[in-house]
Length: 453
Image (cartoon, rainbow, N blue to C red; front, side, top):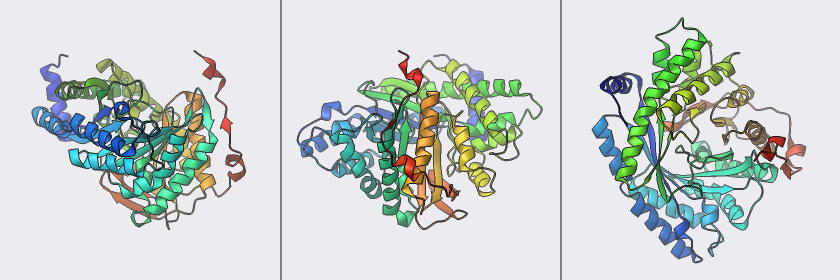
């Protein structure tokens, strides 16, 4: 892969002035060779596999950070869906596996470990049921564990029984982390069409079609895109698209380099470069501000969905020219609490949950890091999840839901999570009920296009 001196100069400028970073280097790790009927042996094998295979992940990332001068913010591991790995064991509760994953993550020094996951888009097995039942306690008693459950797909439709069950898990997780405003829910994603190679948490898990160990890179750069667009206040929208494409290309080249070198040093297969514009609470590092630089007074105002569609498309086009391994959720994220300008827009009433839902139809992720009143009924949460799953299923796209019903908080109040999760206002939800609909259960059939093969 050839990178010329001018590209290096431009990248250094992005790092120093516009907060460019590698958001995460994530090792995907298969645990299929850890399967055992004995629960104690299973846990031992899982711990050994993670600590041996990913033991040098942090050191390699830090060495590359020094070599190229680009910050690598997070080092993570994603493992095979635990509902499958633990199913044949004699464990009736998967809390011990959750604790082993968390202990292994702490031992090797990574930020998060994902894969406490289940795939139930068409129904549940015993292992799926045990895992979902374990989620609230697992997320309340661990620090680095992340969980995801896929409840819908474009081929199978929406499993409404699982949707309701996940709404109940979200409420219970919030209550068990009440002392921290329900922060446990920030590590739990309900998915449709879950990607097998997503390097971003909380939704990362290692798919069963993946190699034994693989390195997936998530590279972000909303601050770079915003700063570049600010230089062209009079450009028409075709020119805006071209500018974003060119910027995304340059950012992705750095991600490709880091991914290949990381994989070589860790004896892993090079995976995807996920160019997701993932914001942080740091001022300026915001997707909402990109939309506003385009000419929208406040993110959420009329035109916001069109602006986000332009941004998402241009990012994918630029990234696809820089690597043949784009994957995961490449595009733009719109997490409310993790994007300071998004949170401000919600606080002043420019951005509602309904507008966010419309925007998810054209972006790479779904309803993300949205804080709602703690007394929101389970059925209303299930209805919100079902709406997002429907958008994803019909549009053949991946989408997740991370809702946080903050215990004891009402609409208009705020929560502060700190660090990467940021802060956000508590957003109002509809007072009208969907109880009779979601309690019908069953499965919403897949759209007719699911017959394509």
